[in-house]
Length: 253
Image 1 (cartoon, rainbow, N blue to C red):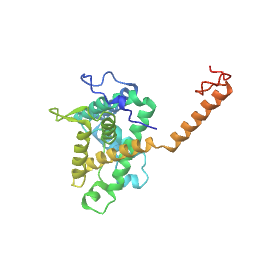
Image 2: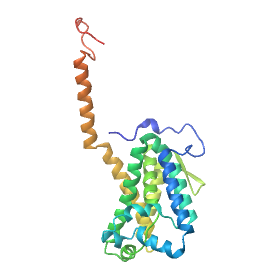
Image 3: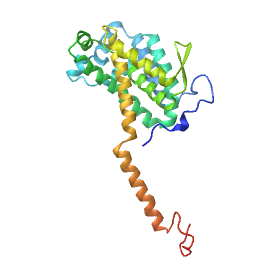
Image 4: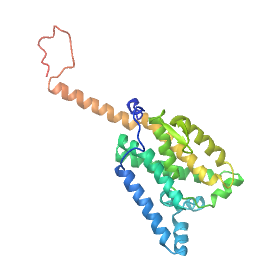
């Protein structure tokens, strides 16, 4: 089932931002901001305990603290961290939700975020010094899912300009390639590779998810079943899609 229709790649109009907040974007931003505010007003000791429980630590996930693969996505370390992540969520996610619908958008968001966390855990198990450091380090933020949205945006709108450092306009497809290369190089450095490993994981999971969706076996089964039902209704009501001009006795409705 095609997920990249060409009619969504138009660049004829221009406006600042994608427009009003869509349903899922509004909910995600609200939850992230609320959790950040609650964390900011809690005593530091309580905040540290919550961080230990909810942040993604590969060591903990290996020992079956599996909820951290979800909860880490809703924690942020600073006002700028949550601000830029939510800004990116609005900028790149709003149009995607309009195309996909809220249900599919949320599915993509969580699959990408959880998948990015899971790949980070796998990355931490590699036999390198930077991987061992990553294995015991808390990871927070929605950036894994955000990078997944960025890749999806580039697939749908490859020629849309994205302003790198808010100055240089670069087509979305080129921007993603540049960001992917930067993240790959950064991911193998310590300690800077901590967040970059998750960013790179988000890109990889998003690409795999979207590509596999195009050739989904279940989508093909649903398509065949729908086609069969349509043909059955046509036969039931004696409806024909066409025929020879001398088929005068066929009724066409």
